[in-house]
Amino acid sequence: MYSEQNVLQSRGRCTVPEDNQKNENIKQHGCCKLDTYDWLEDINFIGDKRRFDIVEVRFKNNRKDFFRSPEDEIFRTGDIVAVEASPGHDIGIVSLSGEIVRLQLKKKQVDYKTAFFKKIYRKARTTDIEKWTLAASREVTTMIQTRRAVNELNLQMKINDVEYQGDNTKCVFYYTADGRVDFRELIKILADTFNVRIEMKQIGVRQESSRLGGIGSCGRELCCSSWLTNFKSVSTTAARTQQLSMNPQKLAGQCGKLKCCLNFEYDNYKEETNKFPPTHINLKTKIGDAFFRKMDILSGMMWYSLISNPSQYIPLKREDVLNIQNMNHKGEMPETFDDYSEFKEAEISYDNVIGQDDLNRFDNIEKNNRNKNNRNKSGQKKREFTPRSGQPKSSQEAKEGVKKPFEKQKEGLNRPNQNQRNSPRPNKPKTAKASNRPADATKQLVTGDIQQPKQKHKPKKRPKNNQNKPKPTES
Image 1: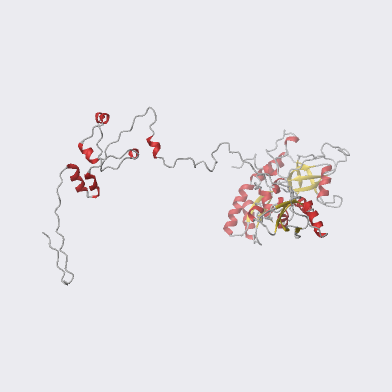
Image 2: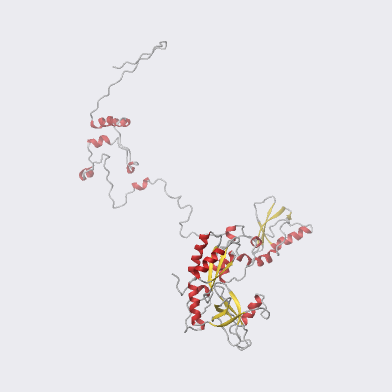
């Protein structure tokens, strides 16, 4: 499932190094996270013999460290080296060398004259690279087994990443947890299972996202996993200064904390906000006072509304607002805002080329679709309809239009078809009025066998004073 070609991608390698591979093909920019470009590579300040003896070496994901190189050897970017570790040695890739490292130490506020740096032993040999590749291939399976052991022990922790040392003698487990976790039993199980030295390191949710990586809401790779090396505290003040909505779902990143990019433009917004006049002061004119509504920081516009007409927004430039406030401070008031309000919002025009999104596209459709069926297309024959009895017409009867006496009598009882609704209705015979009668009576009308039903004698009317109610007699 995990081949040797992709196990080293987290260490900045796209392929497994070979003996006959050149130095420039070992490490290429863009193959790893937190890659650094050496813009002083082509500049020779002092010479190779007196080159800066501290180099930067990178390991898995975003782990980097500075090491002191021997005096006799010169290491360049991309060299695979064996460095000092505790215990044993580790394998890494040189990410920076030369004078650019001096600037990097100054940026991180490290004094290279007094600070202690571990040593670089040598360039990695073939046996060192084989052990390094074997150790990297064990990391995925180790992490899966460790997560199963954590679930069995019911520990409130999450294993995020596993990193083996280059000599395959030590393993570091990175985890996140809300509180303190007693993992002494877990360490015993892991030591017996993998036969290496175990080290547990707790990291935060920001470090977790930087190690795992991902895609942000902007569609790009996460800043913390691509180029951002240090984490600064982010507060909601940065969002309020930039006039962003206080929506936690939009302001939070994949780590659950506030997005680091809120600090990128905070200084620019803060500088522009200081150029605006105070907003708590109302503007006084001869037509009335106006109070502050909103402002656009980047465009330098402010909107005010009259107290008498709060629904109308008056756009003003921040320079004009400052001039009006100075006039009011001197006791002067302008006539209106017409001399200052020259800004007009551009109307958004939309050209409907296709026409399918028009809201009135259904208004011209005929409501009565019955007339469409009456329009016979040219070259088509009229449809032939059969009576409801299910007996089809013969072709000769259809041409001559001859109807049987049974159909003539039943024509008045049948309901006109959909295509015959607009045609004049035929004169119905008198027998058609008996359509509300039962089925037997209708059958008698059609066949001609009409028998008058027996009439029942109506009961005699009772006298008003007679209390005895006589029963009706039947004949």
